[in-house]
Image (cartoon, rainbow, N blue to C red; front, top):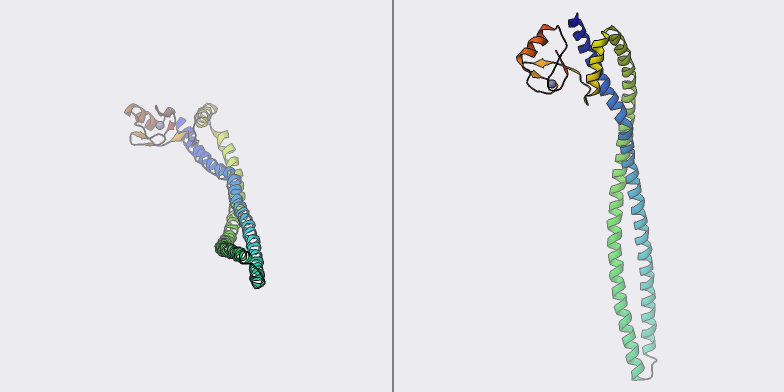
Length: 233
Ligand SMILES: [Zn+2]
């Protein structure tokens, strides 16, 4: 009787929908895992970039500090020479040289201050990011472990569902099954059989005319929705 075939199709659809959902979760996992691993790698890369920047600032600061010491030495040397000069011209030129060096000293001091500020900022960024990186790493490890075992579990369930499917398919009339499979192959959501609710198809939400709803209730033929072609029950 076709009524029995419809009952079996409904059961098959339930199994197929479960298989559809599990397969999706299993198939999507590798790319999700890769994305999570990438977020860890991205953070590590950011950390190594900041480390490089940190090093650069430290080196430059050191250089400027050394420069400052040598300028100060030079100023002291020139100031001593002031006592030894003989001519006014020499004296004036020495003074202007000292002035220039003082100006250079001020500029360098400013640069050192700026570099110190930059160093503070980058150290702060580094400590924040290290903390966040540890958190991300832990979170990603946890999620991957959790999801891996969930996926393994689903793979087992999927095997059971596939076996269940083979059994029920063997019990369905071949022509009925072929109609079902043809419809299912054309649907993105993998749904070929759906319930009629009042006057509408739950597959596409469209109105189903009375003459069809009557046929659905009679359960003597496979009735398809005129809009989405799914089998109605
Ligand atoms: Zn429909």
